[in-house]
Amino acid sequence: MRVPVAQDTSSNMMGDKMIKMMKLGKTDLTVSEVGFGAIPIIRLDRPEAERVLRHAFERGINFFDTANAYRDSEQKIGGAFAGLRQRVFLASKTLQRDGAGVREHLERSLQMLRTDYLDLYQLHQIAQDRDWDAVMAPGGALEEAWRARAGGKIRYLGVTSHSLPMAIKLARTGLFDTIQFPFNFIEEAAGHELLPIVRQLEMGFIVMKPFGGGAIDNAAVAFKFLRQHPGILPIPGFESTAQIDEVLSLYAAPNQVTESDRAVMDRYRDELGKRFCRRCEYCQPCPQGVMITPAMGYPIVAARMSAAVAPEFSKVPMASVPLCNECGVCIDRCPYELPVPQILKANYELFLKHAALAQD
Ligand code: SF4
Ligand code: SF4
Image (cartoon, rainbow, N blue to C red):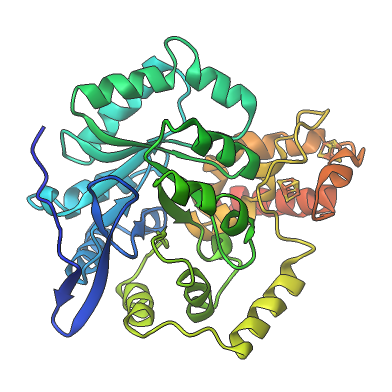
């Protein structure tokens, strides 16, 4: 394992641009106050993806979050930062729940990222008790992650979830250095219920989906909301240099949330309230076996990954949608009273359309 160069400056100066640096929880990672979520780069060809990644780095972003599941995202990051490894922090994740699976995923991530260590490795999408039980079991993912950490392949261990009760439970175990959870002005609950615990335990809080997974198209207001919570690390997904410049220009100004900003947020909440799935999983399990949460999120996956890629990525959950017999159990369980079967039906039609296009 190489020893990473500590970046302990209070800001990264790039020409006349400046981005503040901060400690990620009680780790010794000094990260830029905005990171880079690396799902959208899968839509770019390799030279363009590497150009966008290097632009982010040149503008001062030093934290890059990817996953084994994000197709060639790791490979593109590995290419972009060849020769620069010690100047960036690389985070990846695995959906595997057993030790052998984690070992295989981690080795592949290291190879794709062209490195022999990850700054942060995250057990991804721990949602249900059965996930947690599998992770904690002898020979499970956690045991293997600890082994990899002792061997120097992982510096810090994190976890991600979309379920608030589970995220709170995971944080309280004290086993993880960071937690990654959705947080934005539509999905605010984490700010009241999870963030205080994370702060108390001095964990790093990595904000996934700062734009609600694509539901929020007003970057200025999205980041004004987030910047009210110092010390958190949003990782917006970027696919162009212009997007990076836009977000960094927002961070260059002092944060001021006006009444008009609050009105904009309220309008989004009103408009999205009856159709935006928060991925909280309270509706699960479906008696018919429909994988409700990932199927509800299909349009977001398609928007982030592209209509060409999404059908293959989401084929397992989407194949479960026709099992729905409209019993209504999920509607009763959903705290937002979403019309789940209707949304699933519309998403399935979109999935079929994309699948047909992908085959052409
Ligand atoms: S309405 Fe459909 S998705 Fe919802 S619980 Fe019933 S079968 Fe499952
Ligand atoms: S349908 Fe409702 S209960 Fe189910 S994940 Fe979405 S928001 Fe949560």
